Amino acid sequence: MKRDYYEVLGVAKDASADEIKKAYRRLARQYHPDVNKEANAEEKFKEVKEAYDVLSEPQKRAQYDRFGHQDPNQGFGGGGFDASGMGGFGDIFDMFFGGGARRANPNAPRKGADLQFGLSIEFTDAVFGKETDVEIPKEAECDTCHGSGAKPGTGVETCKTCSGTGQQEVAANTPFGRIVNRRVCTTCEGKGKVFKEKCSSCRGSGRVKVRRKIHLNIPAGVDDGAQLRVSGEGEPGANGGPPGDLYVVLRVKQHEFFEREGNDIYCEVPLTYAQAALGDEIEVPTVDGRVKLKIPAGTQTETFFRLRGKGVPHLRGSGRGDQHVKVRVITPTRLSDRQKELLRELAELSGEKPGQHGGGVEDESFFEKMKRAFRGE
Image: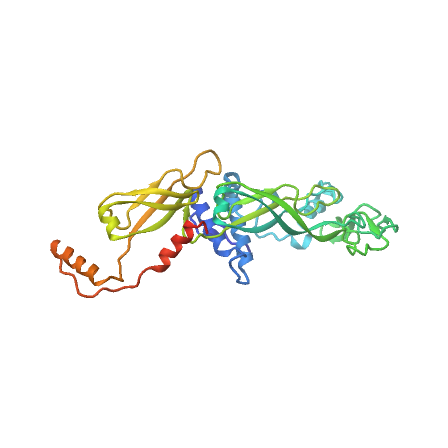
């Protein structure tokens, strides 16, 4: 039994569209098969995506809020009448009204199934966009039999079970008399035709497994969990129907130095005591390269500065977000005797009574991250 979509995303039934989107991004990142190797991660990811696909669309959400998982077009609800043993609503209609209900033509063209493919991209690729080629596994029409499933030269013949109609008549005795139900033919699976010998390439399925190269144009500004739709690159259709679509789910890798929130980028840079106290002009890494930032005298640690227009481009529309720079004053730990003497003198002038021993470990990893950001790594 399916879980409630609101329960799947962990949101209230009156949650806003932004709350639903944030919950989806968090869970999609948690259960994405590329990063989560647990046995049931893929199933949970699919469950989260299914819930988001419904609740993110106002019309689908309104229908779900009213009917739940039950399709309102099914006629009977999820109550106490069990029609499973009678073939569903269509068969019941046939029993009482002599088969007058309109039934789908089993030989009618049907669209192929959609495919989903996960793709990991770098942080900067999500910011600026990228064109790339990917190979995806999929099914394609067999080149040997051209999708018929028959061995070339053997041909096909009319199904003897259903006489080519694609349907079987099954008689059943009921309290209302002898009723005849029509079902899809089990011999030809509704096609009305069978082949004498199976195609050796596809073993009669009409399809083969292939790896197809797809060219993707990833737009600037995409975020983690975004989907790209590639029309016509899903599974092939049946009975001459169109193929399904391919949905590429993007997984944006975390950056060592930058963090993203919406269209804004955040980072943290170190300052010395002298720079914070006296002021300075420093260079700050951005996704566009180095820029200069003026630090006023008396700047306190964890102060934020804004670099306008240095964030992520807006996916829809023009303009970019901002970059927010948080400064952190680094305490020196490796001091010469002269440096210690000057600091004690400064402390005495300020009326302080510092201890005689320093402590802590120099934050080398912090500086290394910033160096790599300068190099564009």
